[in-house]
Length: 446
Image 1 (spheres, rainbow, N blue to C red):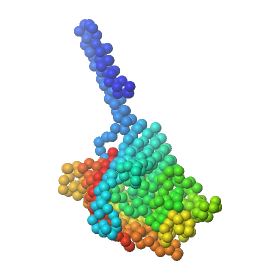
Image 2 (spheres, helix red, strand yellow):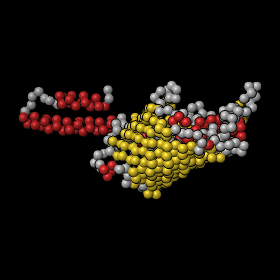
Image 3 (cartoon, rainbow, N blue to C red):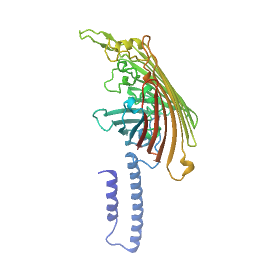
Image 4 (tube, rainbow, N blue to C red):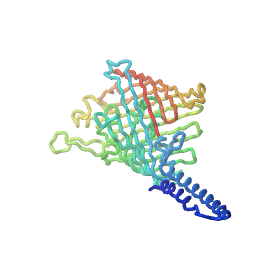
């Protein structure tokens, strides 16, 4: 029996117990006053008990979710409760109609409930917090669907300036990798730059420090298991993510991020990832019991800089990123047809990749219907992606992996936690065809 049930049973029992069978008028007046005082005390205790239970069960208050420690607003709920269990999540789905270059690109119209996510966390004490994200992708575990743990972190909160974190960590790079809930980015698709060059959702096992200094500087510094170079290809490093699933841990990488808020409306920052990716791997490609191929160290340095300005309904973002991969030529040969065969003939892993995007949005209902409670934000985003910016000597760049994306759209929120999206994406490759798309989507966070 929980606290609320005990309090609810105790109240009527106390009232019955306090009713005498017979008494004088004076005694009755005194007894009545005593009963009223006792009743007030019990009501006050019950009110306090209800308030504590509400906090312990993380019953959400009305209002907009807010971000904490750079995490998504939904993922940050656990930091706002006194103690106990917190539950949240998000979901998104979309319909895509290919309206140009459909035959040349070989693409089809598609409906996809992209993901349903459950956040669960437990606050043991003011200092010790466990937080997780479990994701169901593409409506099923069959074909392209999956169920994954996106992050699972144990935080020790010491003070604003320095805190410790360990577990399965989201790498703190770019805008989207940590804050990827659909109401908080524009468009039905995440920016291509932050899917291909900064490969969301990117996570791995590790630990480190994070904090906020002087109310204007946020930082994170982690050591994590590195990428696996055996998964690299002409499209970039995305398939080298190990995602905390029996990760090869021969190589450790370091990732750091700093954001500075010189004005309440302005955030400027950057991040860097540095680590070997060969993971000391050797392969017996001839089947003779001897290792014929040994991957090089393949040191990867990936960095990005970003800025965001938001004021009076205007929101702008910009991000630029580059990566450098040492020994890309040897790695290409080792993974090519004469090595493991992971790469197609002529395919090369780049020495250097680069890309960036800029976007601008403006909330218009503040002028048209300010009392409606809705928001409507038309936006424009321009992206450049080049995963073959520089390739090893003797190889030719695959120009199908150099492309631009021009997106124009609108997102509407009837309430802050629900979003409706509509956009048009014009994708232009240096070589080959990519279909233009009309996309309609929905998203929620709670």
